[in-house]
Image (cartoon, rainbow, N blue to C red):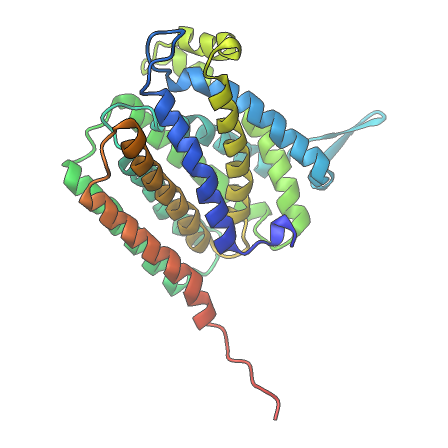
Amino acid sequence: MRLTRLPIELTALLYMLAYVPYIFIVRKLSTIAAPELGRPLTGLETLPAVLIMSSVMLFLFAWASGWWRSANRLSLGNWRVIFPGKWTFIAGIGTALLLFTVPLSLTFKNVSIPFVQLLMRGDVLIVAPIVDLISGRKVRWYSWVALVMVSIALSLSLWERGGLNIPALALAAIILYTIGYFMRLAAMTRVAKNDKEDSLRGYFVEEKIVGMPFTIVFLSLITLSPLGNQANELSWGFVSVWSSSALPLLFIMAVAFFAIAIFSALILLDPRENTFCVPFERAATILAGTIAAFLLAIFLGQPFPTTVELIGVVLLVAAIALLSLAPRWNRPAVTQPA
């Protein structure tokens, strides 16, 4: 079976399995002191190496798989170079916003992984039907029900915590993440959610060509903003990290990120409406965060997920089951020949 033809349920499972080690390692590096620095690493110190290594993996994959042939190309003399279209350029900028906000969101102290996952993933579920309605796609009843179920999970977690009560940089990361996802979904819906393999492959390559370099630009801008004064951290992440003891773990993170990028795109580029696809991707991410939280509690002594957070997970599992089964219920029965 070709990668682009995997059932969305299996793709979501593979996506979740890739995300668990990624989250676990990010949290581990941000809570246990690095020998070189005498303190835990920050997101700005771990992210550059992960992005550079995963970018190399993604570009090698695009070349080895032949997906690059489906991308838009521009003739420059005797050369034909990959050149993104308008919508894939917009998607790449949105992707860049996601690439640096997600790892940062996992490094904030006193903010549990299930809670920040619910915040960052839940608001996107509100964006999904808006994108569908703007683009004229029909939103089916089971997609609305799944959206409500995940919204309840998000509301319960906010109620238990007594509101947001998170650092300013964390709030900024959530806002930028939501903006990035809106841009990405709008572009996907416009050019690639059409069940054509060439569209999917071309979109993937063009998006990553734009997104990966711009992520570095956005990281640099964060260090210059009032929210952060961490130029030294970013410098360490680009230069000193390559000789640090954290490099093997960062390599594993890069491999996991490579898999996450592929499976996430396959889920979101499914030709069905965003209100169907997004809950699959969102719920898989939150389940991965919950599993990672349990592993961190068992092996690193961090707090276990709360009862309310686990209730939210149960609602998400139910939403996945509904999204998986409801389309089959709606299929017309096949008449057997007499």
